[in-house]
Each structure stands twice: as C-alpha cells, then as structure tokens.
Length: 124
Image (tube, rainbow, N blue to C red):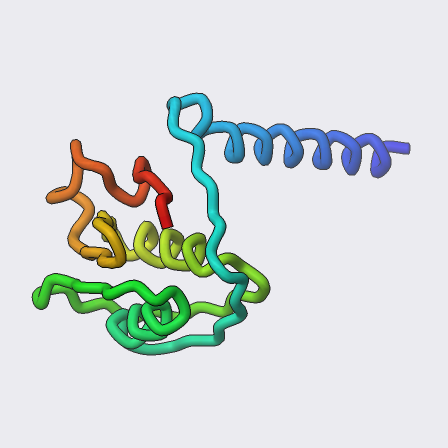
C-alpha cells in the first residue's frame, strides 16, 4: 500500500512541476510558441556546425559573434527546430534576436532588455 501511495504522490508532484514549467512563460506575460519544422538530430561538435544545420532546415541566415566558442552534444527526436535552437542556446548561455530571415546569436547579457530567446516574438 505504501508503494502505491508513494507512486501516486510522485506522479502528482511531477505533474504539478510540469504545469508550473509550462505555464511560467504565460505567467510572465509572454507565451512561447514553437512552430518550426519537426526534426530529429544526433549531434556532437562545434555550435557553429549545429547552427549551420539549423540554418539549412529553417532557411534563416544565422550570424554569431566570432568570440563565441562552444561544444554541443545533443540527441533530439521529433522536436520543432526552433525549440531545439532555443534549448541549445539557453544551455550554452546564449540568446538570439531576429529580424526578417536573419538571426543573431550572442551572449545572453548583451541582449538583455531587448527581445531575446526568453522573450522573443516568434514571427517566422
């Protein structure tokens, strides 16, 4: 009986944490929608190579500051490319801003206070 109660409690706690994680952008007044083409990627290498792959999938021109040097390892399956990009950027301490069909990647601090990965407008 105790195992069943612990399992139910664990599921309830996990579900509550999921709702908070999903609703957090909405509570901050900026809903986040990912509408990019669904992709599956296995990747281990320089972030520039990952961005080239995203650029070829998305059709965006992606520019990144030359001083940024990161190694990325990821395995994703059936995820929108824009969600994959935001996840890699956030985990790498980077942000993006876009204008038209161009994305600029920079360290998270220079983009604060401007439209960035955490509060951007998904008009693509």
